Image (cartoon, rainbow, N blue to C red; front, top):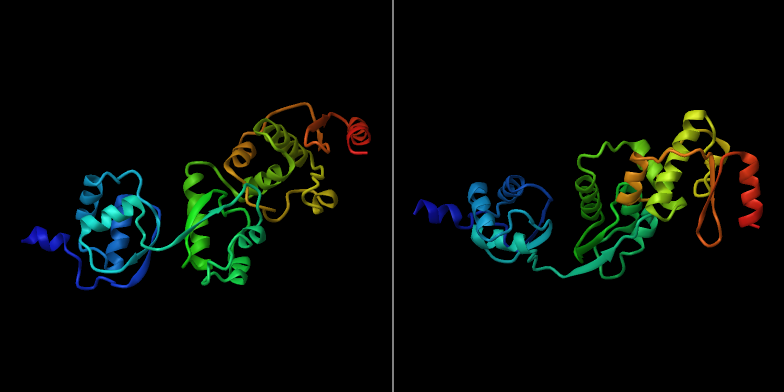
Length: 264
């Protein structure tokens, strides 16, 4: 009898409500579901999740709790992403800005406040990825979804604000992983020497020394890793020609020659 009571839906079950399950461990998700009143026992939620095979791949996001369900059904739903809410596929390309991301949310997202998103989303920390987002999503819940994914994808990396700013520059300036690592080595070297970065994607880098005050877009993991793992080279300058190919130079005279040859 105690077992049946433990797995049964609580009296406080939020029938008809929409809850947001955050990314996390089984323990964290179980505690969160209990706080919503969706389950009685986080312990039995963890057991149920293991039984239904979802312990390694629980699906964060919004879930509609249409009617009371026992802990095994709740675990099964979260394991398989059975949200009972219409979702829309949104893909954020690497290098998209906050403004460009906000434009992806069309009339399907009636609760999405674009101005709130533009005001509160932090450039650089909305991780580029493919998402299946409930059409009921708000700007606030969407920001949390993107930033939680950023935290998960960069877990264990020594990410700082300066690294993300650099990664955003690399995202705009170079295309391939190798080019980004080389450009990273050049830009970090220029910073160390007290030289302006002079990258085309951020105009103030022509006038002032140092990095921009904030990221200029939302970089992907390749650019973040390139910022963290710059490749050493004898170069101090680079440019991208009209076909998108990188050209490097050791001196300013060589750089001017490249400009004349590839950009004019």
